[in-house]
Image (cartoon, rainbow, N blue to C red; front, top):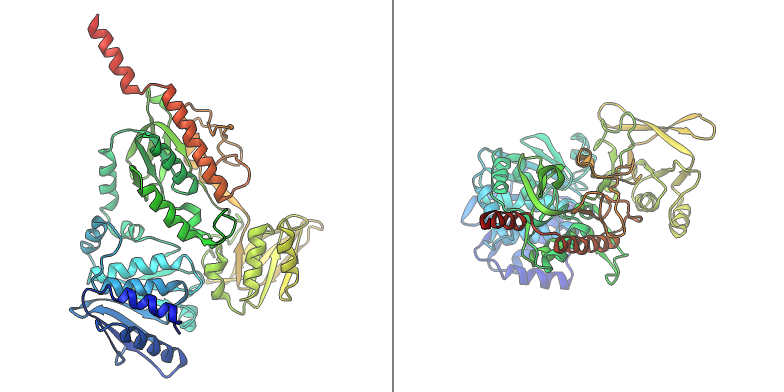
Amino acid sequence: MLDANLKQQLSQYLGMLREPIELVASLGDDAKSAETRELLEIISGLSDKVTATFDGDDARRPSFIIRRASDATKWVRFAGLPLGHEFTSLVLALLWAGGHPPKVSDETLEQIRNLEGDFEFEMYFSLSCHNCPDVVQALTLMALYNSRVTATLIEGGTFKQEVDERGVMAVPAVFLNGQMWGSGKMSVEEILAKLDTGAEERAAAKLADKDPYEVLVIGGGPAGAAAAIYTARKGFRTGIAAERFGGQVQDTMGIENFISVPYTEGPKLAGALEQHVKEYDIDSMNLLRAEKLIPAKQLGGMHEVVFANGASLKARSVILTTGARWRNLGVPGEAEYRNKGVAYCPHCDGPLFKGKRVAVIGGGNSGVEAAIDLANIVGHVTLIEFDSKLRADQVLQDKLRSMKNVDIIASAQTTEVEGDGERVNALVYKNRETGEEHKIELEGIFVQIGLVPNTEFLKESGLEMTRFGEIVVDAHNATNLPGVFAAGDATTVPYKQIIIAMGEGSKAALSAFDYLIRNEAVDEVAQGFQEAVAAE
């Protein structure tokens, strides 16, 4: 269940409890219930502030609630064992229930306490999902700080029949008051923004009070974090505005080519980036989606970025690091069956297709790696590649071809995703050499066909971009607009890699520094003009 090292760590964490907590289990006669009992007995045996009882009457078995002994109205329920990626979530739930303060702002806690309405959340997760812990922890925090919020967190592998009945084919999947409410990774701030109708208006009002920056970075991925840190170190007033801090790194599983770090995972690296940014005097703003860039030449000195909430920020220079997102197939049926068999994250959703037939679209490294991972879980994998041959590294191709439950189809163009209205049941492709159409009966499709730059909001800015939407930059990361620089996956730089994005972000920051010291600030120019007029 828990090895000696984990028990020691858990014992140390439980020593941080400030008040007693109760664990109340609802168990059956099955093996999972026995494992749940064992886990709760271990936890209660490690601290005199924890009591465990096994007389719960919840219909989901095994399950258990965690609550404060002094306030039974605030609780969170785990259905199934929260181990694997969710062990940290379990530890945090114990700590928060026991009065240990969470690492969120006082403003966020106050927003949770002030939520109006009754919110009954049910959330499905898998133990291999690296996107699920953020959602599990967000809902846990909300349930433990507001008695009108309840959270039942369900391990899909234990409750497979329930998963099938509710049509859950992608995790994390969140139901609110019995209805499907959201899917994919979400932070507590993102969830609150969806629930709290006044949040956007308050955020816009806060932005309106901010003075112009010398450098404003748009995007919070590796390139954006590096750019912000470099300009802050130069002593410039720096702001960084991101739709989601960490960007696409948040959706990345194993990272083995980040030099000097043999292995890390995306969410861990994203957290480290955010923490590093906070070490400097940088105004960090999350959950802001840029909608328009108005260049300085149109405004007479300052660049302006307008956001989806209606607010805007101004700066002497702007560094665009908006990154990219997964490319869609763009065929009939894809949108209709997204999260109903069409998926984009094999690590998160692969376990939901155990023993089933799936296809992977894309023969690059991402596609072949996905096919290899899935072949160890599902019944059969068909890899579909548009080109006449796979483009992945040879070592990956060799591994894939050695697997007995994998078929590879090259020169194939996916033309349609079919389903029964509820879920995927087939994929149609055309043989590009013969023109013949073929149908593959299956239950899941994983799309791995590259990236699309997040640059749609720049179309009317006058910024030079390629036909693919990439921002054209020179060797100094400068764009065709004076004072506007760009870096990372949204640009024409070849090879979209985390470590390259960081270097490009740093380079863009140094170029912005060079630009700023060679160009007087607008207010300084205006002041000099006014002084000259007064002297006359």
